[in-house]
Amino acid sequence: MTHDAVVEPAPAKLNLALHVTGRRGDGYHLLDSLVAFAATGDEVQLSLGPLSLQVTGPFAPGLAADEDNLCLRAARLAAAEAAIVLDKRLPVASGIGGGSADAAAVLRGLARMGHALPDMPERLGADVPVCLLSAPARMRGVGAIVTPLPALPPVPVVLANPGVAVATPKVFGALERTDNPPLPDIPRFADLAALIGWLRGTRNDLEPPALRLAPVIARVLAALTAQGAGFARMSGSGATCFGLFAAAAQADKAAKALKQHGWWAVATELAPPLRPR
Ligand code: C5P
Image (cartoon, rainbow, N blue to C red; front, side):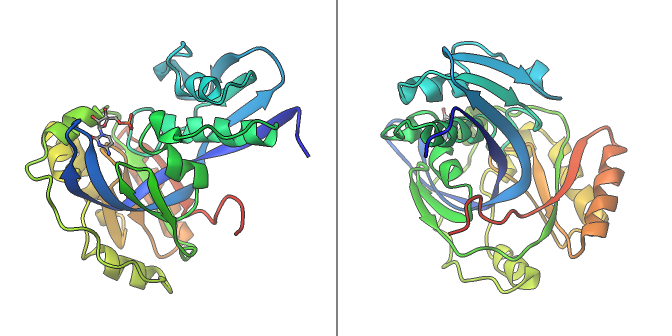
């Protein structure tokens, strides 16, 4: 059954671990990443009509609703028309999917309205294939090789962003090495302790160069740890960091404390898959 109007969540993407394993001739980097999604994010609404975009929500002012907006580019790639409303609830250019998550949500919504998914959606952005899945996955290549993983345990998580935009190409450009080893095998994680134990043997290779470009990120990570996170790391090319917590009440308290610094912070949890498999 196809729909005339749909609402699609665009969950925040978290690179729980991200190793940079190579660099292609065209300058793009080869990655090996454990990706999870949070139970918070942007939202897109699609309805029948000529192609248009309206951006609402707390982070709308940071985002142009122009031709280049990834929501419009996604619809054009799918050769589809729709009236799109993007509710921008997450900070822009912040390492948690953003434009890729929004583009993927538009493609999922268009599919529910009867349009075929376009070939090579990664042309819109390296994170679009994994955001189309919006479920735990291992992401390799420049982003297009996505292997679904078993569900992660329900884990309270705090997302925090100090309000500095770090440009992804600059962070990749500041890497000291691009030939790091791949991730170790990813087991099925029974609980938070098992997940944290595994994460301690991994890195986000983009964290050291991002910290050099925006030292405030180190303060966000320290604040998450001081507030009781069992594990804290930056996601993607930053500047958003995540902290994993043992209890939701602790995560709520931590998010409140981080907001005292004037930072954006939200308590949520690692999301169950968007569509149960
Ligand atoms: O694909 P996306 O628009 O997210 O990428 C933004 C920039 O990040 C690219 O222009 C490129 O400089 C860098 N990048 C990279 N290797 C990747 C993904 C992104 O070098 N696998």
